[in-house]
Length: 245
Image (spheres, rainbow, N blue to C red):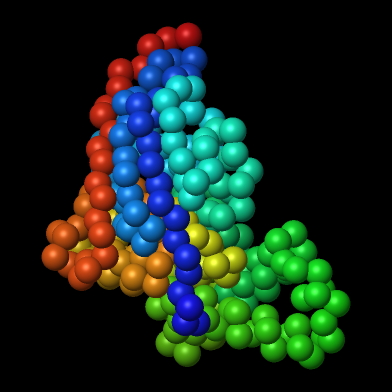
């Protein structure tokens, strides 16, 4: 496997449903996607799109139906699915600290990954070797996300709050890619983006999927022809009328 490539996962679902105290959040979700696919969840705001994204990444428990991610059954093996997946930009859940710089965000995420998910030998390696490995890991993630620090006013010292919306999105993707996830999930594509900027985001996600990583994204599907040879799988959530408790 070449550098930057990842072994993605197949994602399947049959009759997947989530009900809450105010009624149906999403229901009757059917899905079959091969590794390296770009899965797009479309639907009106309030139709359970984000909840479905969280359910398929093992972070929210569905109430009925079946789903598998990389051969792991949900919700029984939610912990395993969380380990192989990563959340990119998901407003309200993965928002970085506005005052922290790009470099600080990257270092914090790298240290967390090394402590909780990395091999023990990485923790015992000499400091110089650890520092070099960290720089290489961070540079690879930034490159894969299409974020070039040299184009920013203060390079990696640029604060998150000073990034444009597309730059902030790419940083969120880079942070997620640090752990080399087999499934990358991102929410609300197109939020506060121009048409051209949104097209650039879809191009980015297609490039990530082209390396083998399965991508799960919430948004209006792009034209299939814009994604090259990346398999595109779309599903739509229906708007629901919530009932009082």
